[in-house]
Image 1 (cartoon, rainbow, N blue to C red):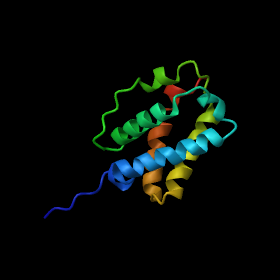
Image 2: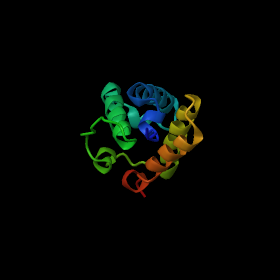
Image 3: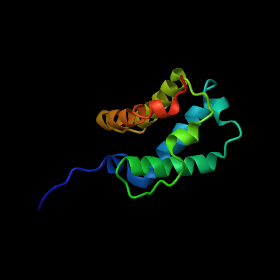
Image 4: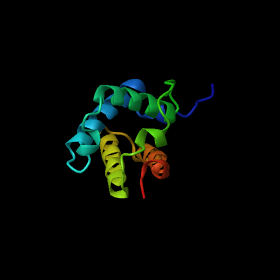
Length: 122
């Protein structure tokens, strides 16, 4: 019998783990006074659903993300490097607090960091 390595999706706890991580993550982000203005007037339940689908897809899970592309979704928000970095810090902190191993946290962080050019406004 051949043993396969779990996907990052599985390491994160599959749908249940990702859903919990997204909930904790957004609780942290909207409590951050430097980031909260970005989420004023946003349909947070819809945003959380989109984030679960996107994170599931990005980590090898079965969910299919069919939302706007990352650049369109962040157009006009005037996201600066320091705000992007805070979001990545909150994501890494959330995953660490939930007991995700550091290798997986690093992989998720690297995936999101690669999106910087599409999100940050120079």
